[in-house]
Structure formats: structure tokens, C-alpha cells
Length: 128
Image 1 (cartoon, helix red, strand yellow):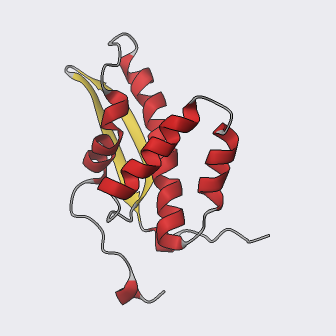
Image 2: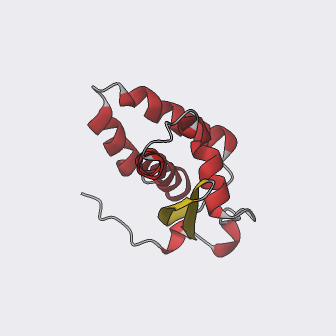
């Protein structure tokens, strides 16, 4: 794909966007073990976000299909489908991959640090 045809990247920090995307999952979490709970919730959001970017931006549906296949017979599939729809509806113009993230405890609760990556620089999965 030519550079001019690429989707532009958002100006907002990826950590802010990531938290906004995951916000419905973060509501009403118990304060006991908050950082660990946030980390578990964000792992689901991270997986879905990146799978949707790979599918929608790079045209590789394998990761998204794999997430759906693994969770198809669990109650979590509803959550995953909701997140997929949320990514496409509210964050569809954000083509960044979330490379890594870290949740840290703060005086006020928690803080998230994340880095964004250009999906076009990812190694391509070999098609089988």
C-alpha cells in the first residue's frame, strides 16, 4: 500500500484512546485489587483492538476470527462482539496498533501507559 493511501493516525495519545475504548469495561470495578482487575480488563480490550486494526487496516481477518473461535462457546463472546462494534463505530478512524501497555497504581487509583505502533510496519503473517 502506498504511503499516501494509508489511514492517518490520530493526534490523541494512544493511552487516552485505549482507556476511552475500554471505559465500559472499567466502570464499577471493585477497588480491591484494582490494578490487577484493570490489567485483566485491558488485556481483553487490547486483544480486540489490535485484532480489529489488523482486520480492517491490513485486511487480515485471521486474528479476529481466532478470537471469535476461541470464545465462541463462552459468555465472553458477547463482550468481544460489543468491543468489535465499539472499535469500528467510535474508533474506526484510529489505525494504530497498541504495542505494549502498563497499568500502574497511583494515589488516585491507576494510570495506564501505552505505546502505539504503525500497523504497516508489522511483520506479515504467512498465509497458509
